[in-house]
Length: 290
Image (tube, rainbow, N blue to C red; front, side, top):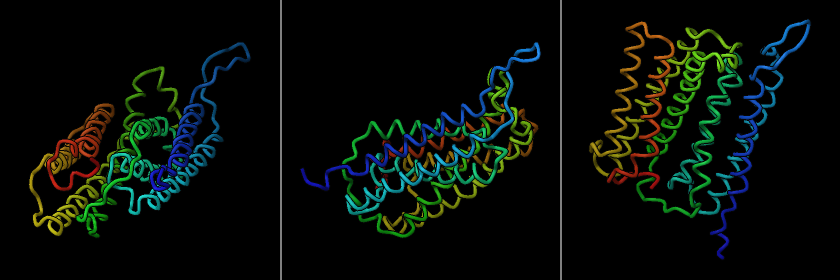
């Protein structure tokens, strides 16, 4: 077998996913209520300790290191940046989403319990990537363009900001149920979470807008047209409209926190479908990870 056909990045990818999995389990264990018996009373309490958060942060950092090495290994093996096939896109997305979420986890300690929502979403991508063929990809000539990389970078930040909004939305929704509300007793009230979540969404709209602009400039340089209304571009524009409409509704009307959370999750689903689904339907030249 040709050495270039051996997927040397896989052990590092598995290690990164294992670190994400351990971080998920520790995060859930850390916020789970404990059964307390003493002084003639018994019941579930939420222990006021955050010692587990250091371990979660350490595991997240370890995952980022392993995934960075995996991407570097693949880059060396195939001779170009691993951003073409679905396998490569998911692997790079696991890194970029993890970087933004880890920064938020480090800098916003009051929101750390939302990791029990965000980390399982990363594992959806992780499970998906493990089912794909890691064969080498072809690097199109149109990808030798600096605007392509600006477009990709902005898109990764945009999707990561949506993930942060979804994590807080999940908390607001799960607080409506007695059995799951106890996991989030140390987090700020829903009104505060709602405000923070939509700030993330406002930032996401900024990066989404810049992503579309950078993509149009790239398209003009690569194919001689800014926009062609193919399936991928149309879906991306509709997602932008949904995000803008959601912000308008949130700023105009008093919406219950859990409904606000459902709106954010709906926007994320549209973005996720655009990012990982529409390239299979789009006949455009920049189909992406197909």
